[in-house]
Length: 212
Image 1: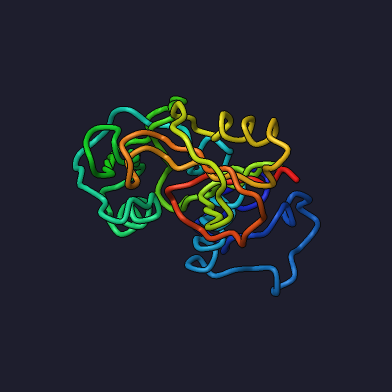
Image 2 (image 1 turned 30 degrees about the vertical axis):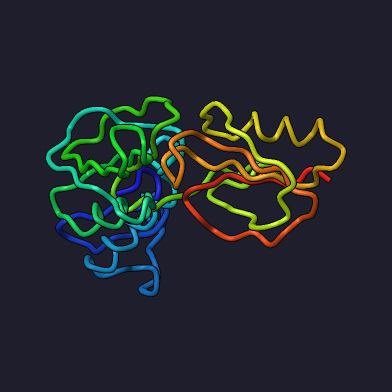
């Protein structure tokens, strides 16, 4: 099932990680798995070892393969990923933030796994991948920090909130910032500079960071 680790044939149940590589080596019974359990283990390993390109990523679309689409009232890409997981026809999905193709967020379910393409508008992934925000030392994706605002202004759309982070770094009063994606209450992207560090709260609308 997974090359070099799992296999099975019509004679013996699945054997784990090369225990039969040496014909003289007979596997202990405790290392033999029934076919149903072997399949579950293989699927889990496949998801765990999947290449980064197969995982859901903010800032990427997967154009093509659409067989249905719908509005996502919550504006949360997790709702799109969950819908794909529940649909046996779905192999991949793309989520577009509000304001990209209209006032509401949209989800496309796909019957194939098209190559990913970098774009600010979207989040995409394959079935079972969930949604994982990028990990960055100075940037908190899908995080809002409510309160502490001393200045706000419109800013160009960005998949990382970089213009907002740069504005905070240049202002000695600024300790933290929140970038509001367009379509979440305002038509344009907006930056909020904060004089204090407030608690983080998960929200798909926002990207935040702490500078000082």
